[in-house]
Length: 174
Length: 174
Image (tube, rainbow over all chains, first blue to last red; front, top):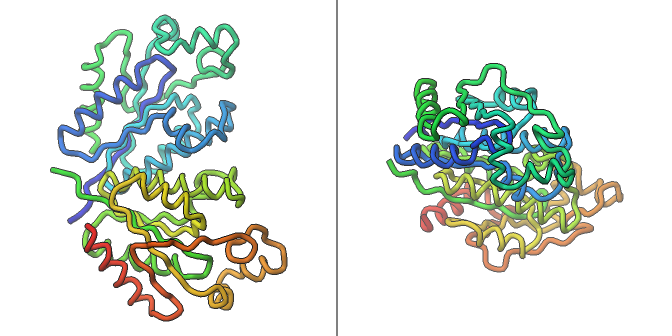
């Protein structure tokens, strides 16, 4: 028996762009095909590894490196890892990408004003009021991917169409 | 396709007891059988997750929880995880054990004086001189497992015999 090939599908984008929604549907579709699939959600990983890290650039980068390490461990053992994390900084995204094989970068994109109007978790409101500091898109930068493997525009396309696009890219790269 | 069953083989014991030596041989044997196998070494995980944690009881417990989280993620995806970590505190070992399925606790045991005489990394010398603080067995406690799945006595048995004993227990529990 040879372990199957793993991969990492990394969803980057600002809060409210639709990363989690898409990630959950992706996981569902991939599991249907019998793959071992793991979802790594940025917020969950933060919780699992304790409250040491904040939202400074340095801490955000460390957070992304941790997710990258997890994704690498899992994917090299045949797991397909779906990551949903804002991951706002290009350099550390590229660092993580370079650390493993079979990495697919997905830019989950919607204009800030659309994401802010959705404001599912009420976070933008709290960021605008100054209650939340270092909030990506409001008081912290988001560096868009320059050459993602896939870009999905969640303000234009339906979730299912976005998922289909990502799966297509995934299959073509495997 | 259904993902294969994963498991965690957790080696606990003081520095110099032989955890790493046994872990490396275990990994080799398990890979021969075609399993996806991952070694999680306590020192390596410390490095991968940054230098935030020290050697206080609280930090050691957090460190063990992190390794436990990694082992859980991997094993539930069909990977056999071999952990080599001092993991001196019984309570957090049991907590980790209770958090996942297919967990085998291995007590890698040799008397302190034997481990100290070996002193492969020169750590006991540094602990006795007071250069290293909170050193398990010298200035920090080690709480032996009360009911490990396997105990191997590395001062009495050869490495190969220890490995065989662990594999036997592993196979009988799977």
